[in-house]
Image (tube, rainbow, N blue to C red; front, side):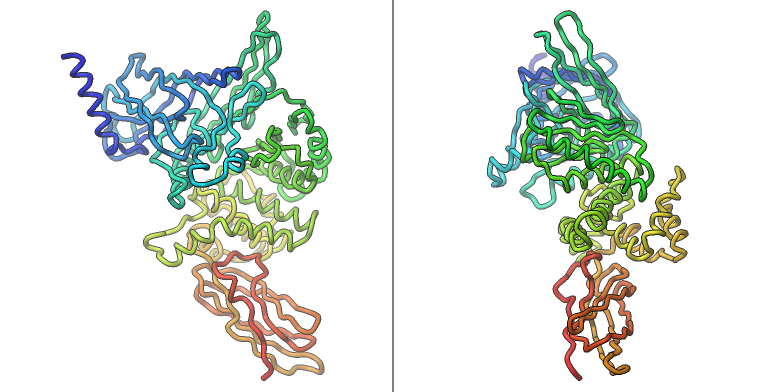
Length: 568
């Protein structure tokens, strides 16, 4: 009878799994001890997590998920084991495409906004696995360059949720084959955990008398090494008072330390030339960043990846990239991005990441290949959010959009935000934007804080711009030249009256260019959403065409930007 009763309980848990709200609980605190065994590619974890009920109902069932290559060993509340059922749960938020899910029956109901602390234990292997990519048709040799996470005797690098669930999470299923499902699930997770406290003490020991290697995690890690007879132990404490957009990550290998504090640089054998490229780029990039954003005040870490074709990964002030590439321009851009984070830190993702990506474009323009190269870089970012913004324009009730002030969607807080900063620079000038950035303080407690800084420096009212681009998501502008009328001016000149129409839902100040003979003249014009604006320009020749937007303003349709002028 006892066995039958237990079986009934377990069957009840499994049958109700589909009805569980997997995102009802928020993980507000992690405190875990991680032990690595590289020779066996194993990870073992023990520790505590705190869950807060963010639903509107009392709950007695919670969900904990880890990578399918890991197994749950124990779950306790107040030192007593609790019932749980472990099952596979398909989700591409882990590199295996499947999670190991524990459906936990809590000792008592947890009321809304109340919390419960769970003691947890799990272990298993983490090997390189590109399953979630190959199952949607990506060739294996390409997938491995994106899914390089692994624990191995020679090289270990493991990213967190969104790549490998090496710490517990709780999300609905994410599927790469279903549109933006994967990114929407990951974005919701990131938003819910943004204020969570995370601490993981990671350690690895060897018994052969050799030091295991350098162990690094993101950012501000504290750790060390110690000898215990023939055993050698290396550890690092990875902790953040708020996760924000950080993805907890750890890396371990026999690195050569080429650091120049506060610049940490770890390179692998054979990649010394690439590492030197980063060292040489540090002085000019630091000077550039200091002029715009202030002197970097925190540590940045550039860490080598074993795969020379591995996709670069950034989290906080840690950058993982292959130094085998030996690309001087790429090294400069990577350093600019990380140094901006070290000089200017904001809890608001659109400011923190948007400024770093803006700085990349700015450096391309001013120190590398000019404005066209910078606009080409921004255009790559434009493609990441333009489709989502089209949905906003077509059906705003169904797709209300994502204001920059609240979004945790990377395509918005990285890519769209970079455009916002670029447009502000073009609108108010470099000196005013530099002044606004340097005038920042710790008093950023209001969503309109940046607007006030920028408006004060520019001595210009910019509420309409921030409302369209930052506080609301009104889609994108769609510019076209509605009319262009040339009039005979003085000898050998024309006066050209140009009317620009904005068919889109967001206003902007946009450049337009009048081309004539072998020359051209560019002016700027402010065109609000669903409106027109007119400007008159004197042209030293016969105007042939007008082109609106040089790519510096993201818009939904770039096919209607050229207007041919015919002789009257």
